[in-house]
Amino acid sequence: MEFATNFTTRKLSPESGIKPHVMAQYTSPDELVECFAVSDALYDKVWNRVVIHMTEYPSDVPDMPEHNSIAGFWHMFTDAERNEINDVLQRAYYE
Image (cartoon, rainbow, N blue to C red; front, side, top):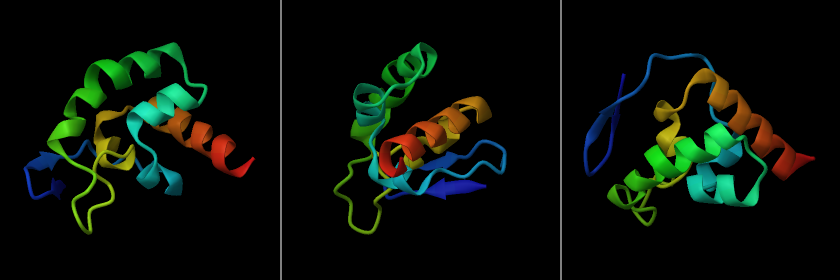
């Protein structure tokens, strides 16, 4: 499976069945780790491996809201991290 953008084509990780929370499309990686309670491991991964890619995919690209959002970088997370992200977003926005 490939994820096509105006800038590049990235291979997605094998489909795990864990889909991003609906709010992952509207939450940036840096917002997730700075504004919500996440594990130290997820915090470190976001700052060391995800945020550095954000400038390559500007969020102001029309019709592409996933850029610079957690959903746009979903392929970079393990299943355990995806579950943590979904749990954090559920608590933050719906509880």
